[in-house]
Length: 216
Image (cartoon, rainbow, N blue to C red; front, side, top):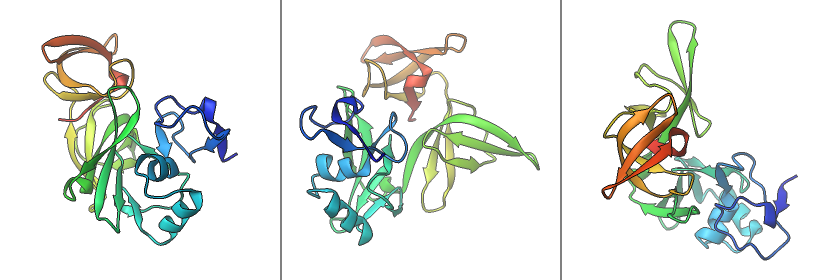
């Protein structure tokens, strides 16, 4: 089914709770992202309905992470990059302080890469290491990365450019929980409890490692 009842839509979607009975359901990432249609219609307001979104995609006016958009139902995930060809504008999907998805306009240079979190590792034949990322991508990489580290993906080269380790003084972005949308630096890490103490504006807060991503 390509729709779900509006009342059951994730709370981080920036849509009115009242309105049409149904809203579009993403092909993937229901709990982690938001459908491209809602991004184009409700957030950017560059299309009025699904028909216009489909037309823009067909005419190759919408790019996601450096590639032509394929379907208005595709899920847009954290830090994904949306490029609007006619206006030559670029946007990155982020999370606001109230826990809702929001778009931040970025430069053309910034649109060439994104940060993703390492959620798994796999050893393959030939001593190759596959990194499984939070946005569903898998990469073979020689970089030394651990689970919960972050990586910078270069869209043009389609490869991992750099690893951002989970360590003290690393800068993080909180994308879930009551501190969503906040940034800070790691003061200490408790691997046993899978938590870290984050310092933000001289305030110290405990955050689960699964609720933040390393950004520097």
